[in-house]
Length: 210
Image (cartoon, rainbow, N blue to C red; front, side):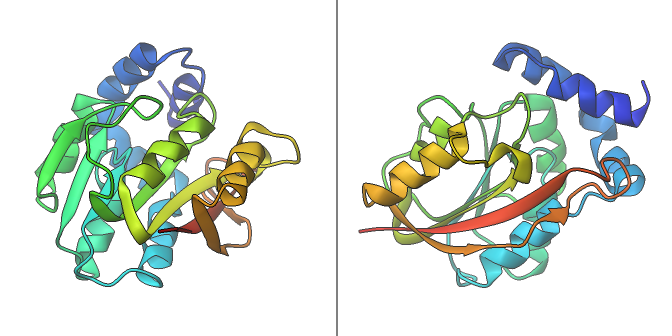
């Protein structure tokens, strides 16, 4: 399957089981496909955003870690307390091979996460909020497992944050009810400049309120 078609094939997943199976199949080729053929820069941008807010000793959850691209970048920046979770065991196996995570857990965004309240100082979630993937409602769980004054950092396709959209309503509701406060949102940028030259992404950073 051609690389561009593989991305669309994953986007077309209709449920978590299908998404998990397709990522399991893609796991071995994922890094080379996205980095070399697509120019995937979202993990780098997200790690840079997190580093602007969270100190290096912060315990971090990489939610939807995939093959660990964001974790590898964060480790290179000096972050050592990293935990990965992902829907796909195949992707987690690849993430584990990078040797940067203290723990690896198979869980699904959109379900209750098996972590206590305030378990992490920051959560990073790159490339997860896109077509056919995690629902906006899962942001509640990311905030729940983040300690007060910690940070939730996630990427979101620009076309999925529009007035009245699922994400616009969810993010605004969480701000209005005092769950979190917006600290930063980047200008739109091309996350896959070679593979999706018309699709823009943004990095959002929220501080979880006490």
